[in-house]
Length: 306
Picture 1 (cartoon, rainbow, N blue to C red):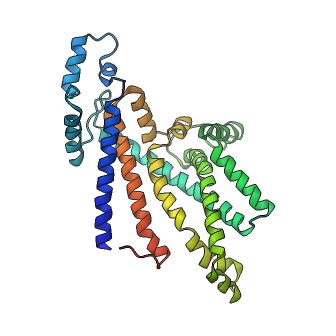
Picture 2 (cartoon, rainbow, N blue to C red):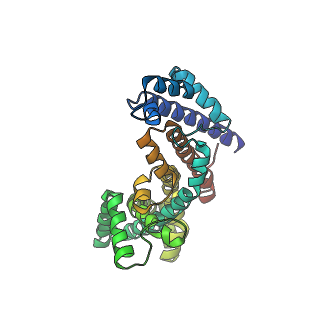
Picture 3 (cartoon, rainbow, N blue to C red):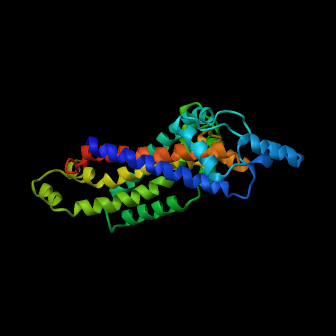
């Protein structure tokens, strides 16, 4: 176990190193100039060059990357070009909101998706199965902003059950979490259905049924723990996606997460913030997958981590 964990940590460090280099390289070759954003349109050429020199952006790319990597290892993500604030402080201020929305979104998509998938597998080939799969396809295909606006109009404007936007209470969380859950539930339901159908065809399921076990016990005790293993891996990926890739939902509902922070930074070419959010999201994906792998043996003791 210790050896496996050490190897995974080394692999994670290498992955994050690769992500940081590729992201830095892409930002370096962008045609947009962050110095122009800082100096303003009316700045003279001398002012632009002075700012470029102060920020160290006149140095070669590898020198800039080495300086950034040295600071990153020490926990320093740099300072925002425009907000003049430590990137770590900006991300830390937005992190609780992102974590809350991530937890709510994953809970909604699991509740909806797993329920749909299990029911569809039980009634496979029947009208209920087909109806649930069509619904899942629509959920996956529907744009997030459309789903979010429809939910806002129905439940906030027309019915008045929830606030239109903002952050701070459970009521503020429901609609954005449900928006994320509806989209993600389509993937989970399809994956769960496929996995459950495969498990229900196994010999040990037929043996459990032959012993006279109830249908509910067969499903919950024998089929579900084995069918849910691919879902755990998907959750690990979703953790990173929800940390930095839910800009649309945060914008529709006015949710102050790091996704919205990243979008604002992209518009202003604020490279330190873009790099910071990218690294936090990548670290969340790596950590989520590691946790998923560590949890898997507790669900299925046949799996050994070596």
